[in-house]
Length: 320
Image (cartoon, rainbow, N blue to C red; front, side, top):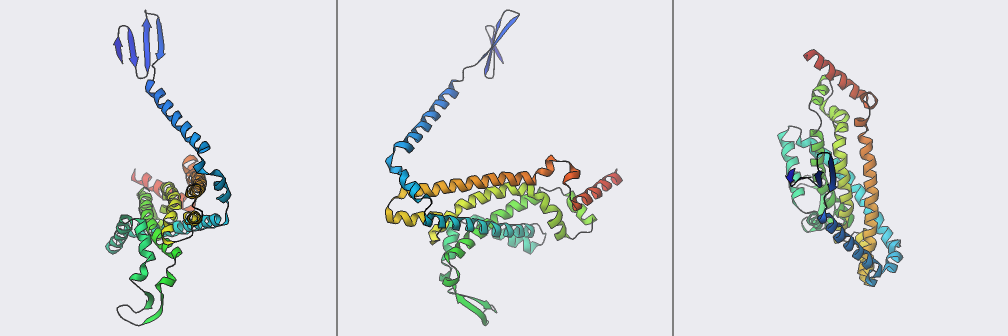
């Protein structure tokens, strides 16, 4: 606060004193805010004007192809690829996170190397690599390694279809990211839970499955939701390997009709709808896993939670 000629100024407020008994508070004029609001309003009005008046958007074509069979087939493939990739990535991420935290140096190095490699190379490069795997291995076989006989073999081109290449490229990449998310969630659980697990006589994998992971879900779910929304959009990379997902489907149409912008708007609107639905679902899931923080402990603890609470409480009383 500063004072000049009977005027005191604070952050955003001017206080003017008229004698000893009268004080009048006058809000300061925020010229910068009004200028910023005016600029944003003009930009929004220009965007709306262009959407309404620019004939190149061709909204008639947009609505004509919005529910086209080819577009809906691509939409279904996008949803299927997103779901399968996230399930595979989540399972792989849990496995890699446990391996990295296991204390076994071989498991730790293997997990760290996997995460380092697949997080360090672009997903698009991985997709192209898997799609061209036949260049390195024309045949995929099962048998005794290092020159031994093969019990089964098949053509790599026949096995690694565009869908399989997309699953491998996106799933392995997602598994590396999910591993770090799961590891962070596990590390967020209080270390005293491990002591309680040992006190209850549970094996490490039992404690991880029944006690640690359920508590870590509050930290894992928000990041996993963001990854799911991101994966929905990353599936568009599969168009590079000719997988008929949403983007590739609209590309097949505008390569014939040459109506590029309207078809890209169709894909964009569908992506916006799906990401909005996933965002709402993420909010509901987060509320479900955070209900224990809002409710009372006695209402939210399960059987193992009550046992751990009892063990920790008794240990604290004895220590005191």
